[in-house]
Structures are given as structure tokens and as C-alpha cells.
Amino acid sequence: MGSLIIGYGNELRGDDGAGLAAARLLAESLGEEVEVVSCRQLTPELSEAASRAELLLFLDAAAEAPGEVRVREIPAEATGAAPAFTHHLTPGQLLHLAQSLYGRAPRAFLITIGGESFDLADELSPTAQTALPAVIAACRLLLSRQFIFPTNT
Amino acid sequence: MSRQIVIDPVTRIEGHARITIQLDEQGSVRDALFHIDQFRGFEKLSEGRPFYEMPSLMARICGICPVSHLIASSKACDQILAVRIPETAAKLRRILNLAQIIQSHALSFFHLSAPDLLLGMDADPAQRNIFGVIEKHPDLARDGIRLRQFGQQIIEWLAGKRIHPAWVVPGGVSEPLTAETRDRIAAGLPDARAMIERTLVWFKQRIAGFSEEIATFANFPTMFLGLVGPEGELEHYDGPMRVVDSTGNVIAAEIRPDEYADHIGEAVEGRTYLKSPYYKPIGYPDGIYRVGPLARLNLIERCGTPRADEELAEFRALERYAVLSSFHYHLARLIEILYAIERIGQLLDEPDILDTRVRASAGPNNLEGIGVSEAPRGTLIHHYKVDENGLIVWANLIIATGHNNLAMNRGVMQAARHFIQGDRIEEGLLNRVEAVIRAYDPCLSCSTHAFGQMPLQVTLRGADGAVLDVKTR
Image: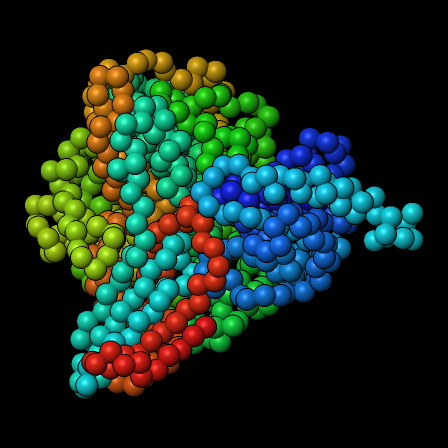
């Protein structure tokens, strides 16, 4: 089982595209052993790919702490409000779907990039742009499994 | 004292809308209205753009059905070029459109409406969602997710990406189909077919349990409008429009795309940003008609694929003449998924499907172009005028959901009058009023980015405007 990276957001809303930008950089620099998916929203269709991964990294923008990169583990259980409106999910809900429908959910982390501006724009603010190397470094560290799967190293 | 109930926003639809229910002094429903509060303005902002940019620009109207806009827009641009696109390109566009119908119908049925259909209209709203479906019927949920995934996968394989692909262009498509992609799509068809067959069996067994909803969910006579094939078969890409009445009689057999304005008028109402198209020869508002899966199955003579034709025969037996209840949009959607899977298989078997000549080239030769196709939700019309340099000077779009506006409003009224009496404003009853709208699967703004939370709030107001009660979920 390999690793899966899902970068998501809206690249036409300024820093909301930070997760997509980071995913693009990782896709260019990582080998084929890591699958990188870019999308606007987390949708149920991603649950099958999630269930096949050993490690899943979600990359998303956050509307707080501009420029800060934060990493937190996401439990494999349903969290947050029910998807009453359309079909998009939170990371926790996606993991819950993977577990419920396909019998397993990977260990997963959410890496957020604090955005500064979410206005209409097709480029990142300098603040979000500057944070991207830290996102890449965090992802590489997690992908090395050095800390999260100590028995494997 | 008269009172007003506001359902704001309507949940599990694509976009943002609200429903207002006005009660009279006796607590009976006096009026019920469906409002679209968002404004887009795509027709105006496209003015001044080169016509060849239009398919990509118009695809941004929607994140759920960008393919529909790509196709209708490209067809309008084909007319501006004054070209007949290569046959293979037309077939590839058809496959893309059918893949779009599979994924969009699967989203509507399994993700948005299955919670009502499986768990019941009165189920706890906290459970009435995709997770509730998974808990009760994981096999159905898995089939729904995989069917939608299959439709999206075909779009991605053909057009490069799932959302806002740029593969459909004025004059045809930008790249031919490869043997590898053809085989990948074909390999997925048997599984997809098995999934929709299972779902049809399951849903048809449950329909009888919804007799009250069938009787009251926009169940009234209207006309039906949609594209039709040359031999009266189901058609989603090309051909003339047909209009039938509520008894199935053909009122207008062949409306060419360039004749649409003679037959379709667009009324503007102050309470909503969604226009209300109507059948012009009858006038507004009596010229009410419906489009989409229910309409398409009501106006054709046959689907044109073996299993879908069998299902069509059963569908037609639901009522003596045309099937009038909008509840049956759900079943019509499933039959169209089955048809799409069968039809894609037929198209992939065409001997010229791998032909590499897939695009005709020309400059602007006409100053006007009209493209009509069937989106998942109904007939989609793009009409452009350009100047001699090919710059857009005027655009008119009639979006599928708009055609159904009059019928959605009348349907909300019918359901509200049946289910809401006096102080009975239980959540399950309000959900039925919403479910009428959901049956049409309206697509109001899925490409706009909603930032933050949009809780469902029902406010009960007295005649003096004072809030009497608030329910939030």
C-alpha cells in the first residue's frame, strides 16, 4: 500500500488554491509511488482510493493564521456537520466513508496553509506562496514515515 | 393572523434557494414560492469576448455539468464557423454527454435523494444524508459512488479532466479517441450496467411506498419539451425539439434550434433571479412545461437501446397517458443511466470511432449561432451573436433548470397545501416540500464558491413580521 495526497480548494479564490498549489509541486517532485490528486472539494468518489492507501495527506487552505502551516492527524471517524447541501465532505467524513464502504481507512493527516486573501484571484498571496516550502517539507517528513510508523523504520 | 414559513436555504440541491410559504388566518397555505437569490450574469460578461473562448467560459457556469455547457456552447460556435463537424467528433461529444448524464444522475439519485427514498421523508435530519444511506444500505451507497465515479472517469479519460475540461471545441473535439481509452471505457461498462440494474430493481420495489408523494409532488398536467431523434428515439445531443401535452399528444413535432425563440418565451418575475420560460403559443403563465428525464421519456417513442426500451415500457405503464408526477423524475433518471451505459457501448463499437479527423477548421462565417443539447436536467440553449471580428455582441442562455421554474413553483404550492395545515410545521413535512424541488434536481450555482456555513433555517413570522418560531438544522 502506498501514499495518497489530496490537494483541494478553489484556485480562482486566491489563497483557497494553496492546497492545490502544494499538490502540484509535490506531483512534480515525487515519484510514482505517491498518488497525487487535485480537486475542488472532497467528494465520496475519493473514498475508494483512500481505502487503498496506507497514508493519506490532505492539503487545504485555512482561513486563519496567515502564512502558518499546521499539521494534525485526522481520526478515522465521522466528524463535523452532515453534508446537508451537496456532496462535499470533511477529511474525517471521507475517512469514515472509506472505513464504512471499503473496510479500511488509512492513517491520515491534514496539512493546512493559513491564507491571507480569498478574494477572486488566480494566484496566491505572497504570504501563502512563502509558506509552500514548509508544506512540502512537512509532507516529505510524513511520507518518510519516520515518526508515524516507527516500527516500519 | 396570517403567517409565513421560510425554508432558507433548500438543502441537497446544487445552489442556493429558498421557499416561502404564506399561511392565511386559518392556518391554510395561501401561497408558496420558490426563490433563487443568486445572480450570475454570464450572458452580460461574455460580451466582447472572442466566440472561440465561449465554450471554456460557459463551462464555468457549472461545476457539476460543465460538459453540458461545453457541448451546447460549442454547437453554437459550430454554427458561427458554418461547419459540419466530422461524424467521429459528433460521436465522441455524444459519449462525453452521456458520461455526464451518468455522473450527474447518480449524484442526484444516490447522494441527494436516496436519503429521503431509503430512510424516509420523516427520518431524523441528522441521519438523512449519505452516511445514513451507508449505514442502512452500504451496497446501494457503494453502487452510487462507483457509478458517479465511472461517469467522471470517462469524462477525465476523454477530455483530460473531470471538471471544466477543454476538449470540446468549436468545430469538433481537440483530440481523437485512442484504442487504449476506448478499451478502458468498454471494460467498465459491464460493472456499471450491473450496478444500475440492481438499483432499478431496488427502487421499483420501493415506489409503492411513496403513493402520497407520487400523488402530491408536482403531479399535474403540463406540457413536456425536449430533443428527439429522427425516429422518435431518446436524444441528448442533437436534433429538433418536440413538445407534447399531458396526454402525450404531439403539439410541436420538430422545432429547429433556430426556431426556439418563436416557441419559448422568458418571463421575468420580481421575486427571483431565475427566469420563467413558457411555451409562447399558449402564453405566460399557462404555457407551463417541464424538461429533463421525465419530459424526455414522455415525449419519445422509444429509447433506442434494448434494456432501456424495456424499462421505458414499464415506465409508461405507470399512468394512462404521460407520466405526470415529478416524483417519477427519480425513476426516469435511473432509466436514462441505463440507456447511457448501453448507448456508450454502441458508440464505442462504431467502426470510425478511432478516426483521427475530429475537428473542422474555419473562421467566423456566420454572425449568429444557436446550440441546443440535453443537459442532465433538461434542454439547454446557447444563442450567440458576434460582430465581423468574431467578438460576442449578445448572448442568451436558457438553462435546463429555468424551463422547470413554473412547474417547480406550482409543485411547491401543491405539496405545501397537502402537507402543511395550521400549526403542523413538523420537519418531515417541510422536507417533503423541499423534496419536490429536489426531484427536479435543480442546478443553481454549483460553480460558485460558498465560503462558510449555510444552515437550514425555517422562520415562522406573524403578519406584523414578528418571529413566532425558528427551526434550524
